[in-house]
Length: 152
Image 1 (tube, rainbow, N blue to C red):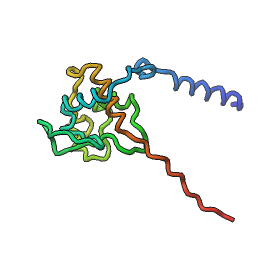
Image 2 (image 1 turned 30 degrees about the horizontal axis):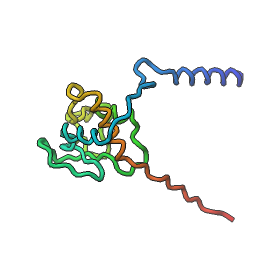
Image 3 (image 1 turned 120 degrees about the vertical axis):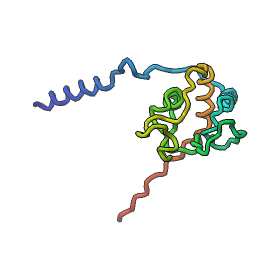
Image 4 (image 1 turned 135 degrees about the vertical axis):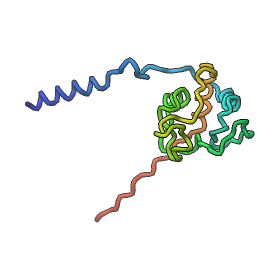
């Protein structure tokens, strides 16, 4: 195959891979939420029974567990809006890393999250405010440059 043909085929494959599918989240955006209302939603839905938010204290939840998945704080990569929305409305999509599977999942394969499904009790406005509240507690750590040895 000629070099031009290789470039053309690769370009076509790349373009097809970038095209959104019907299930794509591309173009999905919710209005901006309110941090204070989001904190109230977090407490009202008893999210603090299983989650701790960096820098905040909540009263002991009625259904408190021994497990506390931490949210917020200094991170290497910010949780995007889409990732936070997905974590709330589809918690089994990706189970929390850094915790023993039996602590955060309820099936033998470790794929189904212990997090309750709030989709039928939470309003869209509550979701919007909750995501805004959670985003406000994440802080991106400054990138540490790699120290390379100098040669003379």
